Length: 382
Image (cartoon, rainbow, N blue to C red; front, side):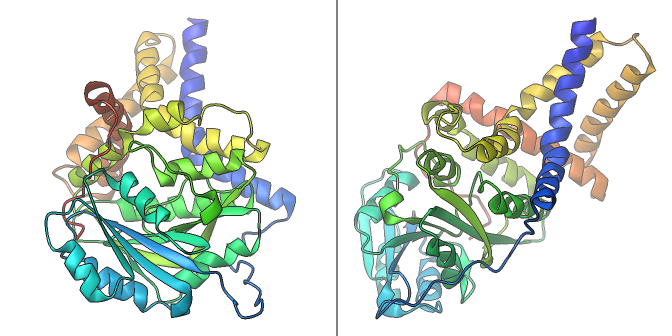
């Protein structure tokens, strides 16, 4: 029973650590190093006739006729020198009027591609880009007027290879708690950025140096792959919180579960196939962040199952194991009740359980159907 007890407390401790202990560890490291989080990143220096770098903003699109014109208009209205900005819409096998409406709205280049998936569209857009920096955005993301200027500021440091901005999810009035989760997540990334660099980005607003762009396989993800691959190449990935974008939130938690499940299908290919697990090349602080924020999060479903099984085996070994089993069953019961009772504690429990389960569901889909690559848009976000 000693081994089972050790396994129980180890796995339970790792669950608590990755969600609560890790942010506290980041905060402590920042204070010990005397490095407060600075939201005002260095400004780009004016150099001759080119005060700011040229940027290509790439928008991948699949049947986005409802929003693409507004997206192009939003891009063209950004507070950035027009002569330094190229707007590219990569239409990936769209069957509607996406390409026509993007051209009519004033996009500099519209690519009409054969169906290949989102990553293939991103790769095609990058191949045709002329900018020194490549910025990317979803078709349904709306940027603040100064977002692009704020996004490129960290590239004043030549060691920076990737920068993501802040995405705010607009509540559609449903029961999804993704907005609350992202406020927590952005706070963690802000601390990571001040230390070893962020371990993931987001699809709404991010940029990469053109010479650092990595063409990925269809199952890849810029959000997850770029930070760790670039870290192995000596480049930092930062978070620019003042570069802001908005997206419409998936209205229901069930819809959010389906979205995350689709995202997790490619996780195996990224973690194993692209070498996230291979530690060689990581700076020590970034390796600590990656293990704490990414790998342990991805292991959470397995950790929960081990904790539950070990807890059952330990019944009768003391009151504490009865209490911990009751706590676990209470979490599951609260998640189930949260479907019908809109009470905050129940909704939080439901969000946590479904988000954790989405990792396992995505890997199950990967095992059954193979690597992903096709487009999957979340319902209710356009």
